[in-house]
Image 1 (tube, rainbow, N blue to C red):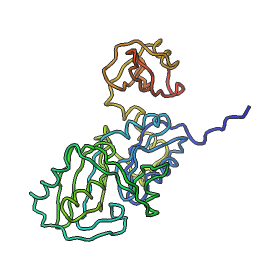
Image 2: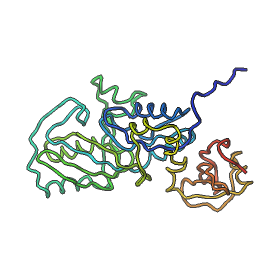
Image 3: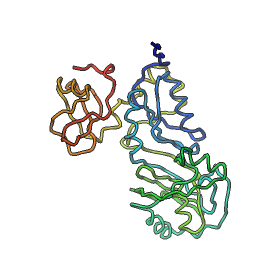
Image 4: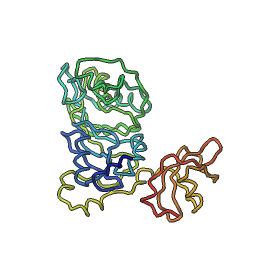
Length: 307
């Protein structure tokens, strides 16, 4: 029998809110953080472009099982749209395609334009994105000069606020649903103004539900010892606080980990946080067709004091 390969690193579990610096990819930032924590397993929840900075939740160990909930979360950004210049990538890292003179930016014109992009809108994802076509990321095809027709999709712009503006820039705050491309939003605003636009600055302020928690920079993490870094980790269930919760007794906990559906009064929601009577997080469940609690994602029993 083949011997199971021992995992390298420490069994770190939890969530770190990284303030990703501009100029590096999300994966590069992830690998640096994973190395600093000497973690066996880590993943980020939703890429930020190399140009962008801001909140990048890093999930360690068991927390990676629930990263999809953060991928689907609403997000808040501050961005600067530079008007009159369109680029290949929709941001300042691309090659310039066209230059046009912006119109006179009266506040009434800006507000009337922004109002067209508030609420539910249709967006065509950019070619320079991680979306895949026949197994290949679109950005790889874009670099080869290949253009693929993309279907538009519905996104929600919950809030679109003008912070300041100059003759050629708009500084905006955007709160939006999952799947929203700020580059595309800025390009579309520029097109509506008749002059084109691209993103020259982008910062992600928030990934729901992390509204008030502190972000940590790579530089600050590098100057800490391991104990201080570990103290920065949020609990595994920190990103699930908007889900309703349910507490199980000892026998129900055993049934849960054996995969047996549990007859119990359930909230009328798609997903439910599950805890034992010591209020230790066990995972996420769903309501099955028979209106019983069915486990969906469970953490390893080895990191819990189970009944």
